[in-house]
Amino acid sequence: RAQDIVVRHEVQAAPLYFDATDYASHAGFYAALDPKPDGVVLAFGYLGDQEQAQQNFQEARNIVETNYLGAVSVLEIIAADFERRGHGFIIGLSSVAGERGRRRNYMYGAAKGALTIYLSGLRNRLAKRGVRVITILPGFIQTKMTANMKIPQFLLGSTTEVSEDIYNAFKKSQNIIYTKWFWKWIMRIIRMIPEPLFKRLDI
View 1 (tube, rainbow, N blue to C red):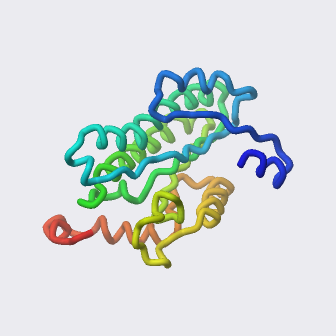
View 2: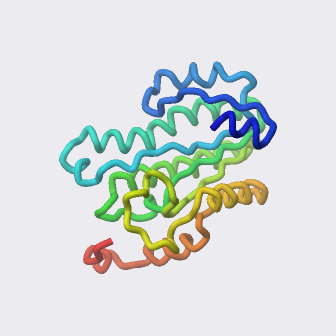
């Protein structure tokens, strides 16, 4: 993929190994980057298996560590550098799953909800230093994560659509965006459902 970027866009690119849950390696990973980036896109995650996570704490731990703790570990290192330099941007891919807990994926949703709140606090912290933090809240995207799910086609966003939404959010200096756009309204409705009714819904 790095070679494809080089050929297609005539820029330098090189693949580097990174393990989100190998926290001890994160400082060294970032220190080895030369030159240091002016911006980063946090785009890793792990859906996991909700039922397995209910029975096996290790699976629950994998979900939380990959989606939340790994992000905090590496972003704090990057944020400290950007804060010192007084410029930069961080784009974090969270999820609409973090907007309200649902029985089918509340382990994943809880981790993404924590990430959303973390990015909000990071944005508040870094704003005075000229560092931008953008939160991306995707719905269902056509990736390996959703390949085996039965999802209505109109709800699926392509990677091209999502990348264009992210780029446009960056150009417009937006703080938070949903992608596809209609997820903002879907999630607003879901958040408004009263808890007694929500408990009876199979979603």
